[in-house]
Image (cartoon, rainbow, N blue to C red):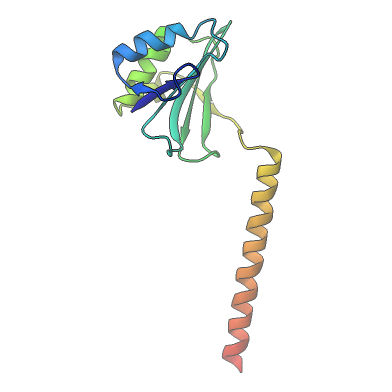
Length: 138
């Protein structure tokens, strides 16, 4: 796993020492976020953002439709470090330590395009099926 920040977009290998150094250092940064993921192409990851109220913690499970944020938005650096360690180790403690809610990260236009694409695909599939049925009757 790799952990990246606005300061280090290339990232460093995920480790307890990296989490201990990176997470608390987000406080007061211009872009105070860190993302933990297996690889750059994966849509499964955990990320945190520091705010003056505390840290937010989010995770995504394979698609934009499955993006979740902790209900609490005042997490401590230690809570985030523990969650990152659990996530990186493949454990489930990070899931049960906090209450999460699904959030919509897809834009209205993305959702509209997706709905139109699905409707068009359904129409084409139905049309192809009706043409095939008509040929069978001939």
